[in-house]
Amino acid sequence: MNAVVKGLAAIALALLAIPAFAQSTKPNDAQIAAIVVAANQVDIDAGKLAVKHAYDPEVKAFAERMITDHTAVNKQATALVKKLNVTPEENELSKSLKADGAKTLDKLRELKDGQFDRAYIDNEVKYHQAVLEVIDKTLLPNAQNAELKELITKVRPAIEAHLKHAEQLQASLK
Amino acid sequence: MNATSRCSLWCFRQRGARAGLLAVSTAFAIGAVSPVFAAPRVHEVVIEGMQFNPATLEVNQGDTVVWTNRDFFPHNATAEDGAFRSNDLEPGQSWRFRADTKGDFPYFCSLHPTMKATLTVK
Image (spheres, rainbow over the protein chains, first blue to last red):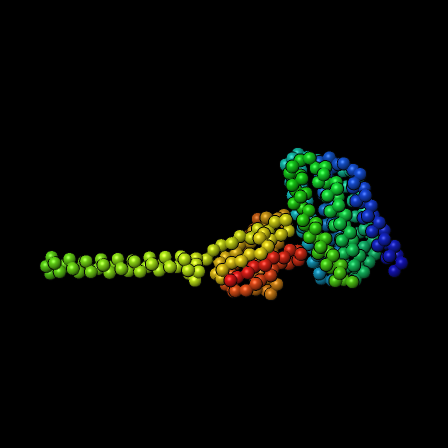
């Protein structure tokens, strides 16, 4: 149990570090594209793990929703960068999102049943909060291309809806 | 049959036809202004930005509501009391529903339960 608590604390700390980092960077459009793709992929990967390991059917359904919605966003993002002839450029933020996502998955893999469900949903709440902050403080203020900005603007309500949905599940699991 | 009797028969038929036509057109005119005979209307609800727009819609019994998904993600329209449920609408897809039962129908997207709206059928 102590290891579990430590694991969860590590996840929380890793995620809390993202917004502080996000405020200090001014990415270009190619870097923003890489951040968008990484942010979605991290949540798709967590969703895939949760579909296999979740105990509660509602948590499983939520995980399936995350896979579908974030895959749809990445499909749009990939189509847009192709249209704009932009090659996504990896950067500190996209790399740290992926590295933190991988660490989160390692911690989640150690958990079972109800513990897994609570840790996954707690992480989803924190992750969507962090992504909203990245959108508001880093992506929207720095995006130059109008279509890229429009894509991020259209995605924001989905992140907000996912956050509220995760918060409802978080309350029901306690 | 002489010319006069032929005329009176023809004139009678013409008068009858005109009277019938008048009765029909009067009925249509009354129907147009009376809500009882109001022609069913089609109402649009656009699903975009994780919202149903308009979020509250009032229609008359017999009207049709068309939901169209303009988001990147699948959505549906599911009545809380089970009175209606669309299939999952892929981006760009629509679903038509004829509102035959009066009442207030709060509904939501079962895929994204924070998306809520209300259909009122009068």
